[in-house]
Image (cartoon, rainbow, N blue to C red; front, side, top):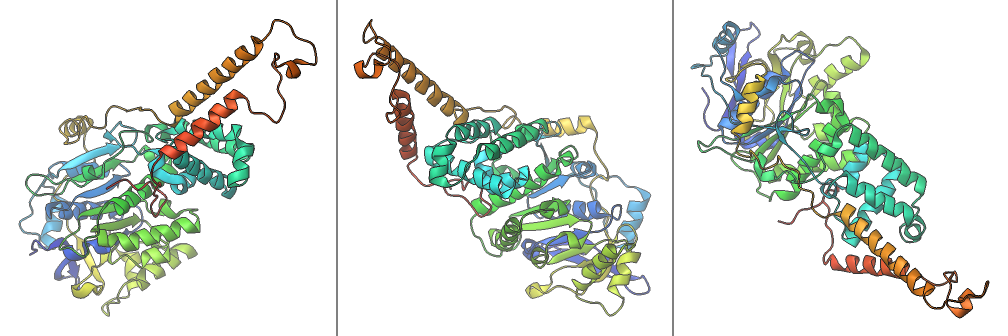
Length: 507
């Protein structure tokens, strides 16, 4: 009923509720992005699960977040249950075969999967400011901090590196303000306090090395199936801003690192953004504009981005316009905003004369959805009322011992377990401070050893005291400036940052 060029989604129904036809997602349009929406409990997770299964079987790697733990079942063989077998018969899925899929579990906290990290430098000032909810003035200071780090060759790998740089900036506030603009100690202090909050929320586990290699979420198995990377996000959702910022960073990394490939017969990777409203909630316009730009351009890198959320109003209009493949589960329309969401969802579909789309959205049963996929030439198909097919893998979460076994046998087992703390800004600034202290101590010793006799008030004239005129540098100050100049000139090349401000890695 389906071939190697498409993913079977389910079966559409005629007005009398009889079988109409198979609804499929064409793999060659899998990079045209998509949207899965619906109220809680209407079947969004199952729709995500069957899409991930289909892409994996087609050899396409998948990255998705597991918000409630239910999606982990995709790693285990499904079981024949009465309601699943019944649904398979209703959509004419014959034979209904069960499978387990190749899964790599990840976890920012390293508890339910392999640790996943990024460095401060790679994150960049824009996303970091978004994560920390900084004011405009504080964001300006953050941009200056990254500029100084780039110019002076200071590696920002983890939170203590950024904290050390900010402390250094506070000490040099007057000097930096003359060059870069207003750098105030109160603004620096506010950022430092926010960093302490982030650290207490577990963000310190995320920032550091070894950083995630994009190649590790783009793996395929020996039998040609795409690996499904599942991010454990139940604990991560306690800090929704960290969750959203991480996903935006990962998308920007894919955009920066992957080469242009145009339209392929199937995507190179499919990326699911669950709880997508968190990406755009209270986000500044500049960030939304850049996300829209990334979504529009990443398609030519062979990456399909699928947003999963309750309400289509959660997605900015410019981003919504880029999403070609759509699955709309039931929405409730009790409040004016909910009624507006239903109208918005209905208006985004190509109308079907057999039913009123807005009315149908409020009447859909669990596991039923309005589906519109791109057809030949990339034109949206007429919306169809569709029964979603049952998954081939297990419904519901896996057991802890099953998870541990999969993690132990993972192709990346052991690669990210141990934190690497190489010399970076924290150590470099400590070294500079020690050199400055040693130089100042040496200068004091030399000056105090010039003569055994001093005349009060005339030390500067005789050159034997410790006082100095206000217009002369100490040896320590000269040493600090010399070190800063030498480090700045040793960078050797300009630091290049990408569309979302993250560090563009060398290719």
